[in-house]
Image (cartoon, rainbow, N blue to C red; front, side):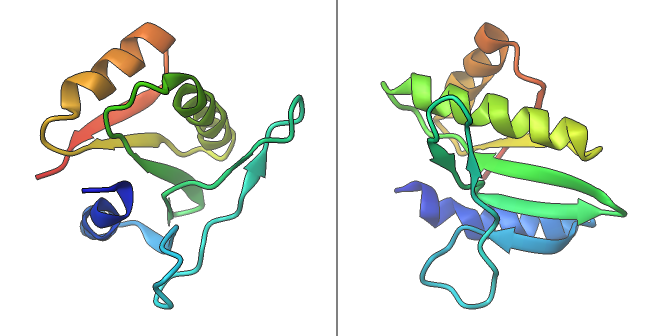
Length: 121
């Protein structure tokens, strides 16, 4: 399965936990607006969060984490989104499907990411 297959599950989780104004990076789905793309200033690489949502005025970000050998770009994206979430009073939620949880957990500990890890079923 690819990342896009898990986004509806993340949306359901966010809705069940009281998040509103949900935006999702699902290009073929007209039900959700696509989140804003963010660029790093040093190399102008753009990142689009998988899902965003608000509780009160606090904006949180949700990222589906799948095992990969290319961790450098993933960690860059997660660090950027973690900083954005902190500035907006929200959190970064790393959503790990079955079989990817330990990989996500090691990303958090090795890279000192300020994120909450959630298991997806």
